[in-house]
Length: 187
Ligand SMILES: CC(C)(COP(=O)(O)OP(=O)(O)OC[C@H]1O[C@@H](n2cnc3c(N)ncnc32)[C@H](O)[C@@H]1OP(=O)(O)O)[C@@H](O)C(=O)NCCC(=O)NCCS
Image (spheres, protein in one colour):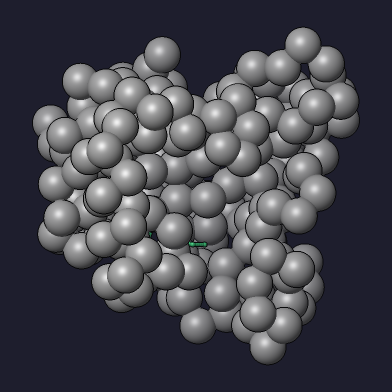
C-alpha cells in the first residue's frame, strides 16, 4: 500500500525494504523518539530483527495495533515508512475507526521519526501532509498531535501544516515532568 507516491514515498513496511531499516538501526537511529541515543535499546532492536526478520516485520505491522480491525471500536495503527530510494524514517497514524478518536494511552494520532542523516529535507512535513489526506479519506476531521515542548523541529512540522495549540501538559506515555504541546490539525 502506498500513501504518498511522490518522493519521498510513504508505504507500508515490507520484508524487501527491511534491510534499510536494519541499516538505520546499525547507524544508531532509534525508532522510538523517546529512546534517541539509547545504545542498549537500539542494539536490542537490531538483535531482535536479525534473529527473526519476518517476526520483527510482523511486530512492526501489528504493534500497538494492526492497520485493520473487524470491530470499528477497536483501535487501528497504520505503520508506514518514509522512503526516498533508501529508508528515511517512519510515520504512524492511529485512531478508533468508529469515532476517529485517539486510542487510549497513545500520545496523539500521529508519530514520526526521520533518520538524522536525512533530516531537514522536508520529509516529515511531506509525510504529515500525506497522513492528513489519508486520515480525511478514513473519515477523520482532525488530528491531535503531541510534541515535546523543546522539540522545535517536530513543532515546526505540525505548525507547517496549520497545527493550532490546544494546551500544554504531560501525557501518561511519558515521564510526568515531560511537558508536551497538544496540537489540533484540521484535515
Ligand atoms: C522531528 C523530525 C521528525 C523532523 O523531521 P524532518 O524531516 O527533518 O522535518 P522537516 O524537514 O519537514 O522540517 C520541518 C521543520 O523543522 C525545522 N527543523 C529541522 N531541524 C530542526 C532543528 N534541529 N531545530 C529547529 N528546527 C528544525 C525545519 O527548519 C523545518 O521548519 P521550516 O519548514 O519552518 O523551515 C526529526 O527531527 C526527527 O525525527 N526527530 C527525532 C524524532 C522526533 O522527535 N519525532 C517527533 C516526535 S513527536
